[in-house]
Amino acid sequence: MLLRPRSTKPVELWLVIVDASASTRRHGALSKAKGLLSEVFEQARRQRARLALLHATGRQAQWLWQGQKASQALQHWLAELGAGGGTPLLAAIQQAADWQARRQRLHPAERQRLLIITDGRLRDWPALTPSACPALLVDIESAPIRLGRARQLAAELGADYRHIDSLPVVAGSLETAL
Image (cartoon, rainbow, N blue to C red):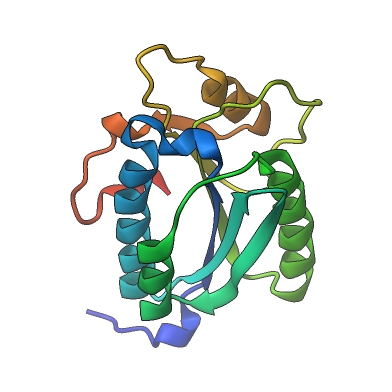
């Protein structure tokens, strides 16, 4: 068996965009998203992946983490995560794409992946540019009557689509999804 030093393994960056608008409070959607995020943070820590976390709530998206290794600080943020206000998700997606492009120029060997967690409850949106890296959109819409806009959003971004209820919550389940 040939052992390779860790330094030869390509660095991975997982960019996570979390929609925490008021609509995600309904029907336990945000609660399910928190469980998923906890698993993502733990997997990133175990795999030594770098994380970037963009929180879309209120009037504008906020960066909480930008390319650092996962730590317990993320779990503390997750425990405090609440929802409210509008949905600056489209601005967050654009902001993330710009940041990813800059980061890719600085770290060309880094493998980037994008995870978007949203209920897709947007009125309408302009045409979107497909993601520059592999992407997964997890739909957390849990209302009895679902609008299904997250699936359309995923298609426009060229992202794989999964509903949160279809994801097994087992350690390692997201490794194949991401």
